[in-house]
Length: 77
Image: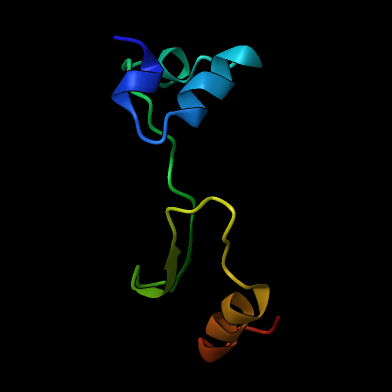
């Protein structure tokens, strides 16, 4: 089945091969999926003190929020 018929809206499946990027091959599993970017601040005990997970790869954690989380742990930043 062509990638454009397996995925909505289909544009990524059409675009990536046109620029030489074969996502299913790069993933090694034949799937048209991309990783989800995430930012974590983890304390020395392994507790997650801040987490930002967003499926939209254009949205990232705000640096001021990450720095605030680090400051709340008593770190000098």
